[in-house]
Length: 107
Image 1: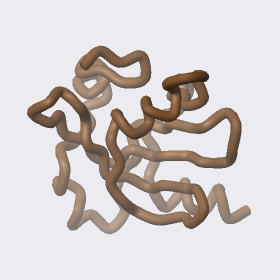
Image 2: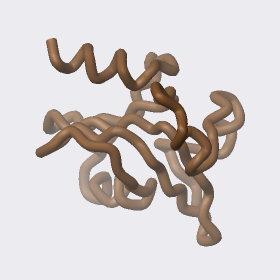
Image 3: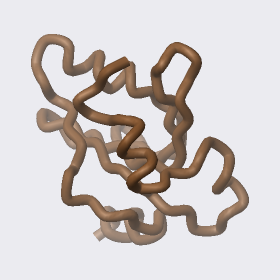
């Protein structure tokens, strides 16, 4: 699966951990930020794993109707872009502790 949003090179460059590797961390790191240019939805990737079909499954902090930890896939994000490119990756986002993200968005 070739993607404009995400790549295997990015996983290696940012050293994004695999699923479940930060589950015991008190304050895990977010490595990637995706956002919807047409709404306030934002996805912070804490962990990811390439699936057999070439898709990526992410675990992260999702800010949408609710702010919550959960799973989402690259295919889901890209499906929103099928008719008009709405989801983008924040190219200027630096890995950040989850507590700092939550604190920033509470202000």
